[in-house]
Length: 98
Image (cartoon, rainbow, N blue to C red; front, side):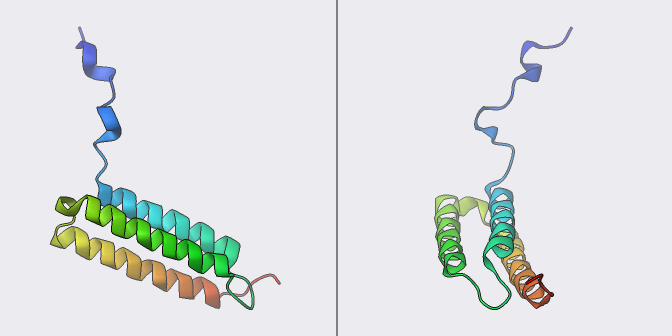
C-alpha cells in the first residue's frame, strides 16, 4: 500500500535552510535578552556580552555556509538585523513597571 520510507524523517533535518535558522535564532535570543537585561534606567552589561557572542555566532554561521548566503539571502538577513535594532529602540522607549 504505502512505501516503507514514507514516514521516516530526513537525516540531519536538511529541509530548513541555515539562513532561516540564523534569523530565528537571532530574533529569539534578542527578544529574551531585551526582556531580561534591559531595565528602566540602564542596560545590564551582560546584555552587551550576550549580543557580542550572538554576533560571533552569526559570523561563524555565515563563514561555515557561504554558498547559502546569496545576494537575496544577504539582503533578507540585513533587513532582519535592521528590524531587530528598530525593535530594540522601540521597546526601550516603552514605559516599564519600575
